[in-house]
Image (cartoon, rainbow, N blue to C red; front, side):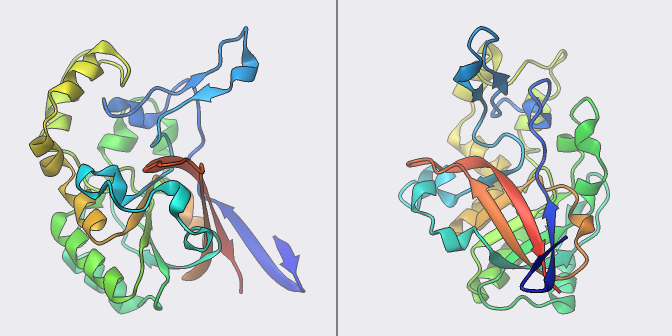
Length: 265
């Protein structure tokens, strides 16, 4: 805890750590394996996917919204020290966030105009990301289509364009990707493995629309989404400021990011 002009201020790290030995999202072919630089050239840095770990995704990530704002065009005030309301929707493994859940959360804490919204289910506090296997990703709570439509509508009414959540995926890609890819034993590695490249070559636009219908709801509403937050349970108040720090990528549509919550009394 620090003090700013005599007022105690608390900072909370909400970011999933990057671990080159295993990142949970690598259960999907759309992920990219996280590599450290070769030992002979440690100065060459790292290689990671744009959605490795905690990440922000813009509407432009989807083909039909390619003409919308990119990462280098996002104003700093949209991501840095953004006033944010915390909405509690407790969920267990594999449970859906429903329309009724969203209604109840808004009844308890109605956001102020322009505030970002952080949905706290408790999933990010259970340390599942530290366990081997795909449980953290495949068993995560997720939004139903109806919940996404209602939440996007409520956020538009409040002129809010930033949604954060401690879930591993926003919507579960259960129509095609999970049954087709995750049923393979042994499961192939993510991109750029030959198996992942072949699968994604055959992964049609219609399959994308069905698997990512929930994400498309938020994209149509112009809402940026941040997923895979951890340790949100440490936040004690409903109104915070949030820092989302993605890479400043020219024409980028998504990025690994660091997320810090700031709690002021």
